[in-house]
Image (tube, rainbow, N blue to C red; front, side, top):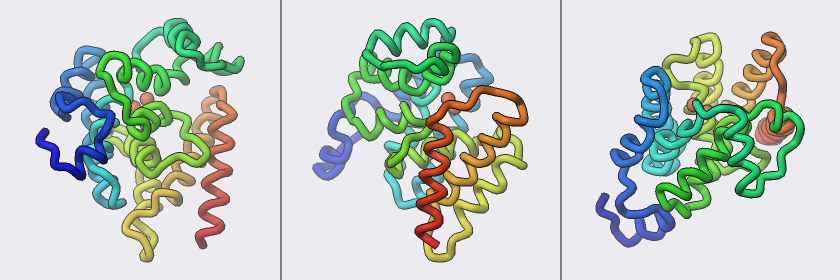
Length: 214
Ligand SMILES: [Fe+2]
Ligand SMILES: [Fe+2]
């Protein structure tokens, strides 16, 4: 990637050699073929949403390539690595290590690829559970993970509709996040799966943002 001076500032903390193709090559051997197709899809949709929302397409696509780098690790390994870099884990996280694959992927990407760009690392880290106060880049990557083409249309259609339905905005990331959180919660309840407290906090955060924006 040739970087001009404004790109140098914008991408400070991302090694020059970490092109999108290099990120793709990093991601491929780390996951199964099926998962890699999901990763490819997320990278493409992240770029598309970033373009719609006026966010940085390079950072969005790069986070898409990196986001599931540790998704196929064993739960106990995710817990061990998360604790090794100082994450304080609650009981739900200790018992459901897969919930940590975002923060662990961010940690591993920092260690292996030398990434020091915090907003990029946060977008990778927050792609599963989100975060109260998350940046637009994090929202783009979270939504791309929900909207990737292999997801069922009864899940993706309402999120796309919320994203594109506000005539005042080119893309309504907050409205789409609220729909994505609501649908995820409904799914977690109906399939009797554990709900991380962050999922509830993040949903309430976007409910409040959307109400105030109306
Ligand atoms: Fe993931
Ligand atoms: Fe994913």
